Image (cartoon, rainbow, N blue to C red; front, side):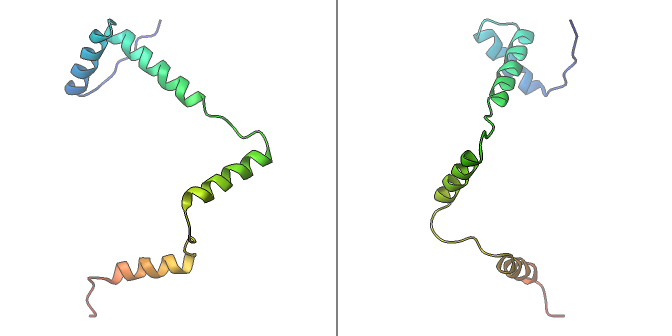
Length: 91
C-alpha cells in the first residue's frame, strides 16, 4: 500500500478529523472515502451519444439564456474600450 503525505492548514485538518470521528472513521479512511466519492461524481458525466442529443442540449441552453440576444463582438469591444477610458484623463 502506498503512503501519501498531505500538507493542509491546521484548521482544515481539525475539521476533517472531527468529521471523520463523527462518522466513526479514521482520518485516513475518511480521506480515502472522500476521494472515492469525488471520483464517482466526476465519472458520472454523461457523454453525448448522438447529434440529436447535442442539438437538444443547445436548445435547452438557449431557453435558459432568456429572451434577447447576445451582443456581437463589436458591441463587446465598445463596452471594453469605454471601461478602459473611464477615469482616464484626456492628457
